[in-house]
Length: 361
Ligand code: 13P
Image (cartoon, rainbow, N blue to C red; front, side, top):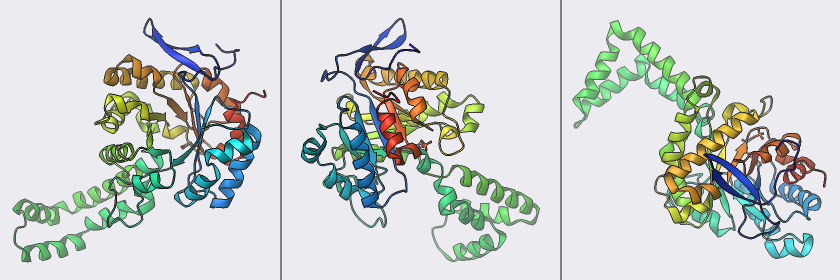
């Protein structure tokens, strides 16, 4: 397929164990439409977001057969929701309902004492269409940002444990096993073990602490319950890739993330494959063969879980250094239905080119 242009609208078929795209008439309402979404991460104040969207529409007002999405930070959602209101877009740019407002995250409880969190019903109430859940910035990086590691390491210091042991002994109902473990750790012969354990956990949490698969599952459920579509992210880090554990990890992330999503609801879910090692400045996008291989793996997993018909239609996006010069080749792959774009989505001409698959027409 290499010298051909990628299809803008298509069906997907599976023959001889292989997934293929079959071109559809442009605008065929039952065809699959690619989805190109910009994840602005923690960038742009609200009016800068509107200015960026306006420039992108200027470049892309003729594109009606591709879905586009913008995920500003929470503070930018309302302003952008007002701006991209469909009637306005239709009048001003002639664009139809192919522009979607995305939130970067949500919380799973609907209200209560959760300072700083935003619930899915709150997002739905201001006009959000879709929500990104399980982005690797949240799955893996929270430990580093919020210092979980140093607070665990502090709790494993001799001073802290000595103090805690004394405190716990005053209380009733403390499990004897807890006291015995602390006493054991505090024993002189175990000091080196304690130090090693603290260092091990500190490093481990620094690298890996973040949202768990279970929290992500609850977020998926909360979003769907409130009528929001979900962009469920998955992806392996470099270590897992080098250890040939990519598929095992993706299998776990997706099976847990999708648990409880019934067949009729599955069309409300979009999957985004974002290998962590391919994300951000200085990284390289995943090679096309690896993207193709993983997207097929995910699609086959969806087939196991939901059957062939649904698996053929669920959109699977790729994310990680998507740029105007590589989107075209990615979109030619039979398993790729769009992209989740980070830094290039902050530049109007680059994102507009990505929406046009890097083609000049
Ligand atoms: P980059 O496109 O900046 O690599 O970011 C990808 C990403 O994380 C999108 O969600």
